[in-house]
Length: 494
Image (cartoon, rainbow, N blue to C red; front, side):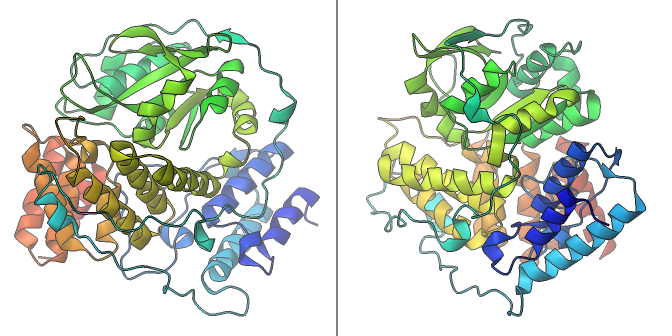
């Protein structure tokens, strides 16, 4: 017989209303993993294929990197341990295959309609032509405050974490000590900040060790959050996860529970060449004075007031990374609550972005549109994401460089527009945006950009150009496995 805990999961998969089911097979497997951990079942690993986690489409999204967890794509996904029992494999097989059918067709229904996908009004090719000019064009109408049905938070609730967060009274002041300060070498914010955070958990390496894995080419301009999480899972005995849509209260809860929080944010000012992306660690808070204590690879320890932290954190979708001992994973999951489920987390972040679109103006409104697009990419709504990115580029083109720092490096750090435009069939826009990004950098060590331009060229019939760009991508990062894969695939088709 099936244990009651698993029976609850099975029954949820069979709900008649699609909104009452798990929203993706990945969410289902995460819940299964959590349930089995609670049951004390011995675990091993399982890999989810792309077909199990995505609706059918004419274009099959490849992974950005083989190092990527499922935050961007389901291909190459590395899931947490599942179980080594024959009866379990039967259950998982039935649930995943059955869920895939139900997810696409519903119960007694037909394939989902795509009528809600709106045509975009502004192409990137038009915007990038005027990126350095002041535009007087009025952006198109903002979306309504209520997200479409497919973007609303699911009506179901995850199994309640234990202990419940609501019963915890946080201390007024917490300060975490023990992080070894490192001052970053050039373009080494991510490796340095990651090694600093790991030092809190008694890891003995430094930024040179993390950089050797994360960016074997020292010229590489950026390290993605999922690459940092992958480093932790593969190169240390610690656990890590990253989410978006963080806020002040969540930071405080994690810090009070003895978990430093690594965040990604924008930065500008003395010592920086205009606007740039940056990482830093939140290590404490003081309610009486209303500030966070941070530790930074560039300036050391500093304070940020509660009312100010969102200003630059918003630029990166309020992204945060938590590292922990595996034995304490349940504590982290309890603090995150429903945000353990990635779909819920992205839906919530999309709602935050939509609300900020109405509340903010100028550059901050542009970032809100970008965040909305990014969250829709995570949710596989590529057409909706493309429309949001169009709004971002329209606002971007109208920013006055005499009044604000133009975030011209944005695509170095966040590649969501490539995903949105490519899987919306807008190959010329991918080509134009990637070409602009490459030409705007004095040293375009941006393997992701070369990669996406290659895919766009292939889609447009320029095979030789695609091969040249892929060769440049793998030259820039020899560990860029998906670049090697695409290179071999195209060469094999010659």
